[in-house]
Length: 455
Image (cartoon, rainbow, N blue to C red; front, side, top):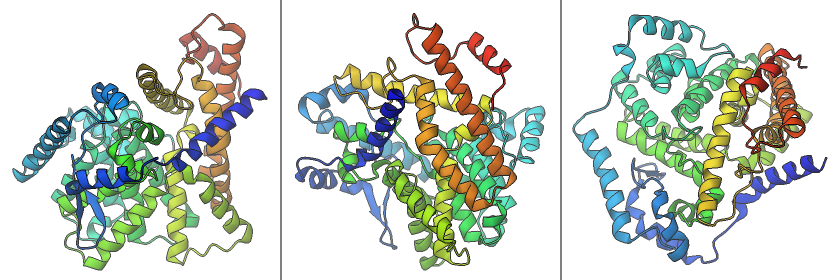
């Protein structure tokens, strides 16, 4: 019971982290002035961010940050900014865009990839296998296919070369070194979003614009994720935290980066100004909805709609709200996948947490909740995540969809996976006292677990 209370407090602490603010209001203005040329205002008035506008977090300089409050010297920052801008800009100006390697693969792989795409609407879709079959180009290949399946290319008169260029830009701006927040995660969320868009309760009312927005937001919702969370950016005084005043820092960056890529690629340049303006604003609304700090806000609103039965999907505003809910579900649907897939995602996200915790310990920062590898085990993290974040959202989603086969399937997987993590946690407490309590699942444990019956 005490452990459950502690887990709940940890997740509540994470949800409150967005309320932290700088002591000095001058820091915000200073960072905006210093990096103001990295933000571009288009004709629509929405600020975007150029690709490569900001350097990757250089953890070698973090020690200087904790001592002096500066990220290295201004000269180092300027050099990093200039190099990344030159790298991206020169490649684009020369028209050199790396081509997806799918068409260079062995015919056997091509056949398997095509076969998988024919079943892209199935919930047991293995995104890890698909990424291997497409030689690491799962996001580009998946989006090209889904845009075609949904008739978006024809409806919006999109140029295939331009679409491919834009999707390559998005895929490249994910950091492959991140165990979890990488392009494979984006592809997984996009495939889940595709499944949700086909739910009859929603699909019967969706317009082509709704579908395109849902798929684009899913594909780009974590673009350029640094592999650390918002509290880390705030306490290390990262310029993005200052730029967005500690509010939805990562989500704002994902949105503005996406707008920057849309404009650079000119994917939607042939559409009327008011159409592109609406697309950019709605993309922001969808991506910002994935901020975990706003979880209760969306749950309360969804519960109110369902209890009052006042959702009118003929209304664009209500449809957009349900697209926000669908994206939130897709973003955290890993616990609702088959155990083998769900377990891989759990290990990946915890590895990313532990990396952040190791950095915080190395530089004598307070270790963030769920990031202490010595105390926060994978089973305990997953049980808390499922209990306080995933279950409440997916139970409401099932209430909205009307207990469709997909919703029932997801909830069944969620219950089974939670039972397996509980079993592993019990095994750790009872027979692994001599271990380092890292929470890693051994081969013998997993074999024993798979042989057991679960609810």
